[in-house]
Length: 126
Image 1 (tube, rainbow, N blue to C red):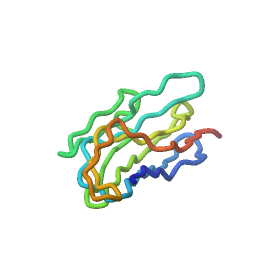
Image 2 (image 1 turned 45 degrees about the vertical axis):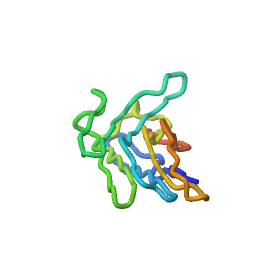
Image 3 (image 1 turned 180 degrees about the vertical axis):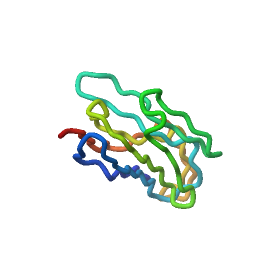
Image 4 (image 1 turned 90 degrees about the vertical axis):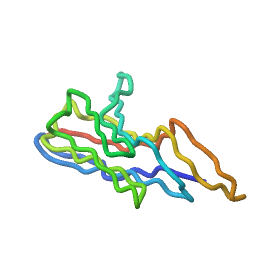
């Protein structure tokens, strides 16, 4: 099977930095866009940043100039470098893949769409 495993969350002071990672594991054939979303308490989940397989990126206005998304396609990993963090960035951050193709245990090609990681908590507080 396949999994999206996030890491890098934690507690940081305002103005600080964190780097989130999300690695897709399994017998992966290809991945389309990879992205990061976040959900703060009492709020809806929102897009933070997304990167296509070709490297095109898109960011929420609230994080432009502070966050940078990147990916290592050879490692099936997406990163989110977060700088100048603010208390309003506090949320659970989720990794998302819009379309992932992989081999299952029977060597059949399978596809997962709109696939989510388990989330990692980011808390920005003094």
